[in-house]
Image (cartoon, rainbow, N blue to C red; front, side, top):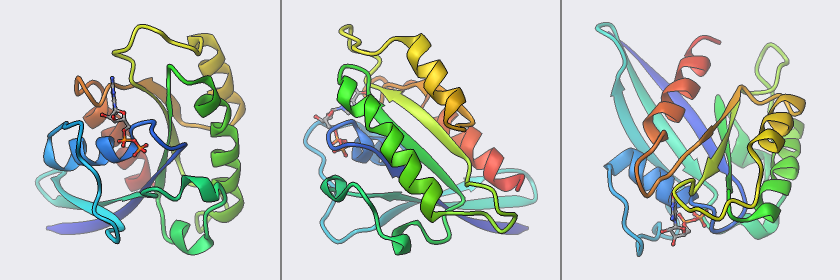
Length: 174
Ligand code: GDP
């Protein structure tokens, strides 16, 4: 049995659903009052990936540091994948994905010199008042080197596991 350790980051503006995503993925729950404990850097989920492989996923949430827009290199160190998340009802949070991706690309690099794989998540898709068009997301996604984008609802548990699976798959193939 081989066990891999994967550090995955989740970045994006405040209030888009990052800590809810981590909580949902790791514990399977969604509760509105959940707040990550101050001082906790990451959550862990153990995946039984195949008969021969286990993957220990470390999911790092920037937990309230969004105002420092530019993250320290130390935070990004050793990351093998990243989620950039925005809230579909908040167009500013979508526009800021540009800065999050840029910051990430400036500070991370795989041993082969390429940027780390990154997925763009359009969260809160359960809400009807979308402020961002799907075609704008698609365009942005292609222009900025994301693997893909997906709409997610952490609330309704839509695409949370799927997005993580896609990212883990990609990270393991590197
Ligand atoms: P963070 O600041 O990015 O970590 O965001 P939080 O995880 O604290 O979530 C911000 C707010 O959005 C909370 O009130 C969540 O309950 C809510 N939220 C998170 N995900 C969803 C979702 O998929 N749909 C809806 N409707 N609300 C969500």
